[in-house]
Image (cartoon, rainbow, N blue to C red; front, side, top):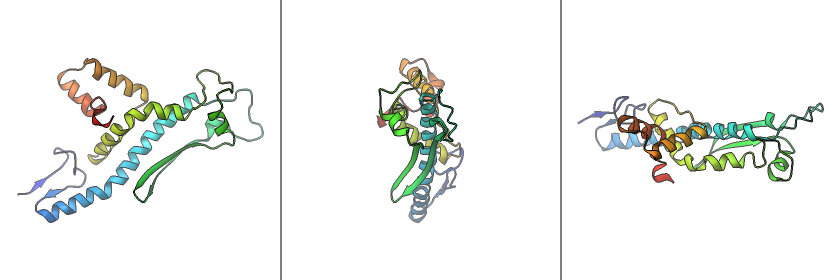
Length: 190
């Protein structure tokens, strides 16, 4: 018996055209999935980091009194997301602000910050997104595998989706679609 998984079939294998016929083919198919996993995970992780950096930029301190005529850039002009990088069995991305004073602005609470600017401008967005990361990464890899591509949602949208699911305002087909799209109340990953 040969079962070919495809776009209308199950999630795994859609892009790989996997055939389940005999133990050797199963092993070869699992090897294909395992080889693609780091690439898919890296792509999804980068999308999540970009969303964290976008949120960070909205609260990053901006020195309005200094137009930086000496050529040094404003803090928000140096934001960057690098990666994904693959080292042994680890996948990571790097989010940073590349100025000499970035660490001081991040760590010293006493510095003056106009609203909505704040200290810990990178740490706070990371902590805010952390409860959603595991589910987003798992869902994102699944989406990458079925050729849908993954785009990380802003944190405000994630919170709204979770609130709707928790409040039970979605019923029937709409509820199943939302759970498939946004995760099942953060599921087993919390």
